[in-house]
Image (tube, rainbow, N blue to C red; front, side, top):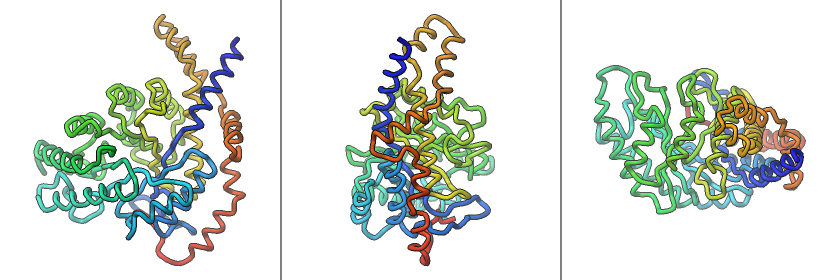
Length: 394
């Protein structure tokens, strides 16, 4: 009986995993680094078109990375319709459009929260440009992250800055089409160190609730104080219907932007367990699963492949949690029994199941080895010699 139930659970898990979608970020394919140094690598893309070419390799080998997030102005091109067509030609599509309100010198004291009306207007113009790009590329999501904040007590008014932010967000929201969303990200600190204008999920949620039902919160797994129970706040946002997206990465100390699942795979599993339990992987779910990582010392494309595989493994384990047994243990107050159900799923080696699934999907069972054999890494080093390598503009 147990073997039959386990086999049934694997079949159900495979059904969900087959349609899983993990969005990769364009900036992860370019050069990146720390605040001290950007580390160049041979063969990285020179423009947004070549970033899409690399992203297509990740999707080709994993089967679950069909969309690519863009970052403006890092991915600015003359013809966005042409870029969208190129994405389709190589087997992917344009996903979330990310705005940049943190690298212009005018934004030293903030963007939408800046005390100077001229700077706020400049920031709004950029966000309006991003909305226009959404229409040209077929993107449905605009993602906003603000470096806005202050470094010293008394530097500016908390209340005034929140008022300015709310006013600006409302104006951007009004520009969105009926099938487009605003995704608001938060960050505990950095680069502002005394206070950040959107430091946590509660502040982000308040602003989203104020502007409209298509404004959703983004949970970046690296943007929390040490010890924060991220799966708890994920459960709360899911319950409120306001979890719009994840930015998956790992951290040891702060916003480290390491590969997802590298630092704490158990945390990633716990997060995905809450997502599964709340229907966040249902076909009708609005949650977008994105990677947001900086591959500073590791090769770009294999790092994205490995990250996608890490999310797949955490998801597979979460799908294997025996929900009926877990519910029965919880309702009966069986503390250890409930914990055992969760741990049994986490301790399951799901790699053979995922390898089988890939074969069933017509893919190589080992995407990492398949990429190493493909010759793509050697090919792009030769083809992309010369020109200006893409990076994050640091």
